[in-house]
Amino acid sequence: MQIAGLNTLGISIARIDYAPLGQNPPHTHPRATEILTVLEGTLYVGFVTSNQPAPNRNKFFSKVLNKGDVFVFPVGLIHFQFNPNPHQPAVAIAALSSQNPGAITIANAVFGSDPPISDDVLAKAFQVEKNTIDYLQAQFWENNHN
View (tube, rainbow, N blue to C red):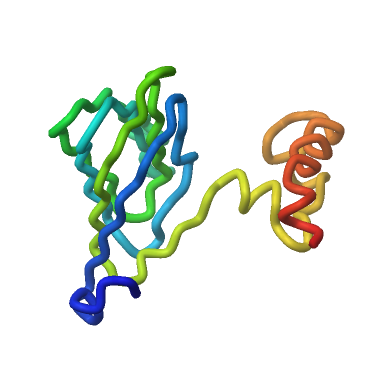
């Protein structure tokens, strides 16, 4: 939307600035593959495969990237980026294979939905006590109950 020349080309691009110890939390792009290039600093990145048959079920792939390194996140898979340096920021460019890739931040979607997902459902899914789910949902109260 901000780079008119990209409209209708089926691609998008974003600059991401990471504070020291900053992150782009686990999320997914349901309509795009992402290719990330580190311009400055260091990033710890990773993604998890889908619930496909064993032996690759929910396999975690990760790597520490430095300036000039590139990493690909396949379409629809949960992935993240984290700046492990407590003193220096990091900068990256993300290119996506859709002009409308979508973004679903996992914690926000699961614990901050409006209306909230039943704590009975989440407690069973995560195999934890309901009070743990209530605590996690409360962290999203401001975003969930404006």
